[in-house]
Image (cartoon, rainbow, N blue to C red):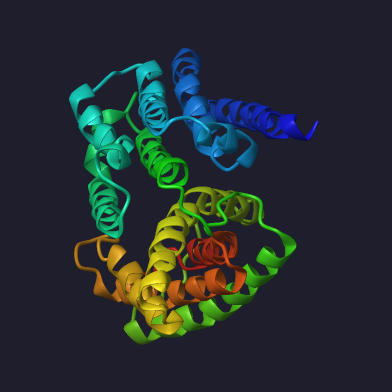
Length: 324
């Protein structure tokens, strides 16, 4: 029974997402025929993304030869795009996916090759508004599905690191333990006051809730938390803490120095928020990311940091949406 659990969870996720997509399509007046053509690509991308979190699915793949694994990762990145109604920019897709999928086949795993890949990955993300929208053009005015490109990029990178680079000590997954929930909540409670004080001092703190009825706000916050936790917090904690901080700890052997270096890098990653060189938001991000790093160090894995990260972002989006 346990061996079937990941697949049963994926089936449940499929059913839940299908129902949510149909409700969303009705609310946004999306033609049912169009929704039906888009849904397979969405469900496949989300299933491929979620499947990486299950060791029962990852472990059999780890037994394959590296070249076979790289080929599977490459093909999996193409699959949702191939069943998307518009097959736009195939050469762009190949140019993005091929180097990452076969990175550790071409280059020997080393600190130098790790750093080079870690520079390439965010460089593409910073251009995501253009590149991923080119790959997944809007199927109708007002409906964007370029998030499929973002999910593909994240899972491809995570898959390469876990299956080909075989990094350890990440604690990757979507189900925190009780201890990880506790640690994450503790550092959220430390991050929020520090973030609010910094935002006030920087003059960017503005109270502003989403444009939804008050009774909907808890449901809205729950949806925001799940989305942030599974995508934004997962990807940032995986690479900034799990990979970068983990590697720095091995090199410089100084926990405080490594944490401060990664904290500065975390802030720099957010310089383009809303406009170029937004140093105030970058500084604010660095402050709260310091606490996410503390959560990672205490828990020994990224899930506690994901909890702190997602709670902080959710509180910020639901209460201070106009800040920054």
